[in-house]
Length: 447
Ligand code: FAD
View 1: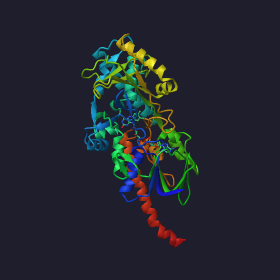
View 2: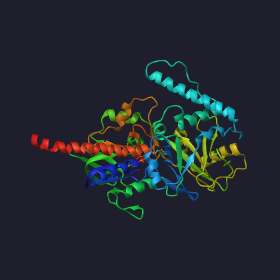
View 3: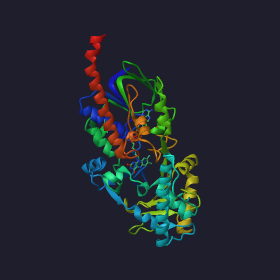
View 4: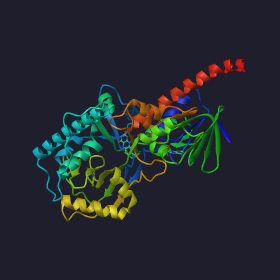
């Protein structure tokens, strides 16, 4: 059995930033237990078609505002290669099933109507939660273009409907990471500052990979953490950074069980599934001029292969397209073979660009929903929810401190949310450690 004063479960950005703050404050005795064979968690690059693509987080969202996004700062320090993404043009590149692009005026009007209706919807939810009746009922989208815009607005661009702290605080610009080292090199850079590394490899034995935590026991005196391979680790405290989807699953058990207020809060938080499907082609057949990086397919089924991006701005000559599916559509494609998904994607592309479109030579379909160490992509708190829900998700239970993007009050769902949450959690734990040290002499005296 190993002992440490803090066990950190998970080596995603929140786990690494939590460990870094502990180390900077003199807590050298910690162990990081990570279920997979790598650090990074939902920041994960993979080689595909001669370039490096991001299966998880792809953008640094919130740049150019009054405050500086800390992840943007980290990225600048290591010259992470990024490309500005201009989503605003997507609304002018909406294709119908016969390959026609909707006229600009019509698309702009439909967009405006959809934004107005989403704002009404928000107001009616607000009124509902206050026990009142909204003045005007929102209309629901029906036609393919309305459904496509509704999908873009709700699953991508809620910022047009309600203020989102990421954009209000850090700015409205978003940059796509297009660096062969991957977004994850930010984590390696952070880890280098407090873990023993050599030649870009982490050799510090306080980081333990392939350790799947299954049980966390706590008592008055400390915690005992058991992993799937039969190892046991003892410590004074645990920082748990597993995702909200993992907390909702039965991967982890707690002794004593978590209190009801905690489990209820965990179950109430929605989990978004967001699947970027990468397709490699022998050549480029889509328009690549200015304002054409993103395009939309309008189909009678909401979210059916709706949102497309070409990778020519990020990697010229790569001949890669990315289509993003969410929630039910993500779960549907995760459950079928990649060949079936490829067939569906090809039929959509041939609707948009004609029957001569060449067949893709490769496809990559990440499966975040079926990954037992993720169970989804990011937390999505109900649009109208009191802050108590998040506070309960975040609150420690005895010696177990919860962290991760889902515990970030202002930036849940984002990389910078995970980064800042890890720091905050460690600061709260350091405070708790200080208090318990202060109390020790007092307790000895009373005993
Ligand atoms: P994680 O990265 O999930 O880290 C938790 C770690 O815990 C993982 O490594 C996991 O393996 C480990 N773990 C889980 N269970 C156990 C266990 N039982 N025992 C041991 N270890 C365990 N954010 C943005 O800012 N911009 C984007 O463009 C963006 N796009 C995204 C697209 C996708 C497809 C996804 C999946 C996410 C995206 N995000 C984006 C969100 C962002 O990736 C996350 O908010 C952030 O990376 C979460 O970091 P974390 O440390 O909280 O969790």
